[in-house]
Image 1 (tube, rainbow, N blue to C red):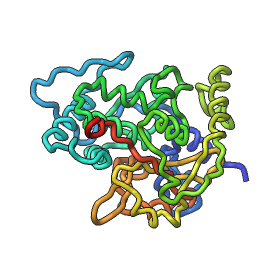
Image 2: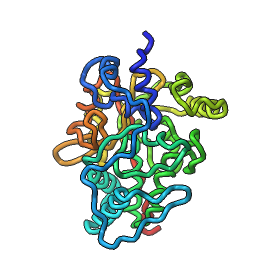
Image 3: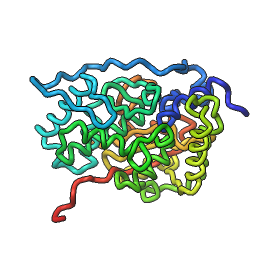
Length: 338
């Protein structure tokens, strides 16, 4: 049965942030996905810059942060958040912890920040968007990992943090136009694994082959303004074709709980989907405590960054989420004695 226009537009809008976390499929009630999405209002334009929830105050007499390459200096709230997180991490000696726990700690500092979709596509030209005021699900993952790497390496320069974001978001770690962005999350994992920033551990924690071909962008060309260019369209088509050679795995939703002993705090979780042409629909982190194995993520339906208490229950609550992909952040610190 063909996809209804509201569902199609929701998925198109959301995929521009690597995964369909803007589709309101991330926390729809347990109803058929089409009904869940059709009930939502789909944004038709890039949102205005968000105002932060509970903005962080900058330390007294803090020097302004410098711009990096073509990136503008951060807005005051992002600058304040960056300084505060780095200062708190130093005060609590967070860098001494295992790297997964560093990732989890950083992610916790952003709990309650608002969810905003479409932030990467708001600028008319491809721009390195670095913003700690609000997130979609993928931007939350990227910014958390970038901050965690800065904390672990003892870096307190905004330029280092921005470079970590760029390295994760773009092919070969460099922004070079719209097509250089890693638009599909399976591509994001593959590229960042080759760059030594994550390790795909899905098969190792009980995953099985995931037979999926990503074609959504080229199949919906008319919904992507940037694809009006034949050159950009051809580049995206080549990117999709290249992904056919990437071996994919996923842990089926009814076996996620069995994998809990093999998961670690800070593991990146992506929810595999049954939706045609898409690989995953949402991303976040394992949140691990003695009491639970939860899911820490930027939630569209809750309009904020939050922790869902049980990862398996969260995934099973949405019919289109058929399982999870797991990527483990790689500790950037030199090993002892090296």
